[in-house]
Image (tube, rainbow, N blue to C red; front, side):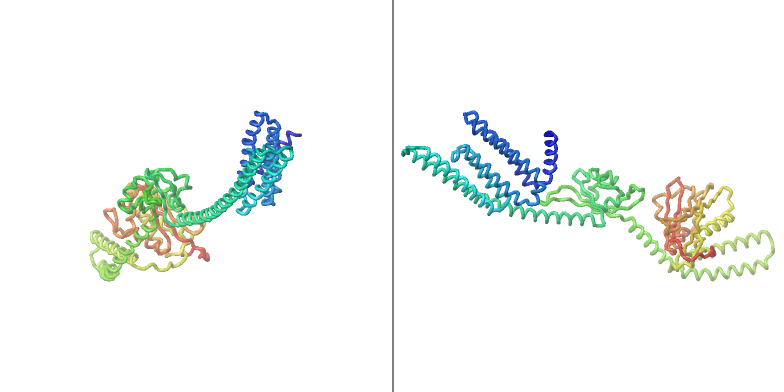
Length: 559
């Protein structure tokens, strides 16, 4: 039973210790240490020099202190409701224990008078300056009562009073007065210091709050800016990173970046080059495999004294901006080209119409021979090519008009593939359609979308001079968009020219106007869509067209 009670008491004490405020916890710990060391040492000395009663009393006092502290821990859940009163009771018990120790170990000559000074100082720490003065007054009164009691006891036990006894009494009185004065001085000094400590503590708390606010503000600013920010030490190790930097780099968390070397994140990039050039642009592939263009700038990281302590790297994702710049350059070229083409188209079409009409008239009058028919076919085909070329010019120069209406994407794909295979008649070419089972409608012009498909198929064919397979796939992207992918097994596209393939008149072929892909992008942009290319040399090319899906009334598949 006793062992179980002790285990339960120890468990309750351990649980209670975690709930006690740090200042009170430190005081109770110090109380046990002082009682053990000082009173224990006193008991040993008294016992050594024959004071067995005093030694026994000091050991008994140590036991009382331990039991009293244990009881305080056990009752703390209740005492915590009246914390101030429990502290006052604790100080009161200290006065009782200290007075008993002083009285029974010599009174005025007791070596434990300093216990009153400790109590005065602790009172000042726990409460206020006024409480410190009151504690000094209580110490003064208790010590005076002990001194008077001791004086009366010695005076009444002596039948003959000599001048030497009077001198000793005067010495004891003087000793008592000095001790009392010491209590008052300790009380005044402790009160002053405790008040200063309390004021300093309040200022420190306010300063800590202000510092936390500034730190939170700094952290919020750093985490809220739309640029990636990384700080480095002089060796290039990453010591901090903000949220946007992780998002741009495609990292899951700080642990995947902190402590790593800068060059391991940004390959082939030196900090010195960034500082020297003020700003550089690099290609970066994130963890998802996306190719990004990043703009980096660097500056020296300095402490509050202006000493260098590392580097700050600030970077932005310029991919979308670069794409817009490219589109703007193309638009500027088209605008300039449009001014020229709009005038030329009219001037060219009139002579072509005259030539075409003249060929029809001449065709009825000339001698019907194989050579004459061949020449007539050549002239007619060339006139038709010129008409198509003028039509391509006009497509590029006309503004993006509103789409005509709902268009069945799967129907466009199948119809264009059938017409394309009939026109090219290549036995070494296979074109497969992998269309979505659902009906896919987009807003657009059916003739223009057929031309887009034709141009992409023609482009794929030219990339496979020895033949091969072309796959056209349709599907749904994010539920709100329709995609069309045209994949070939051709030679692929070099990274250096990939960004130029949609520019008018850019071509790598010996024969061609360079308008095919420019028209594809023009038509797709007019349908509020986008076109992207995925390609590498030797691994073929995939063009991906994405268009907003039409969710209006079912047009019954009619275009």
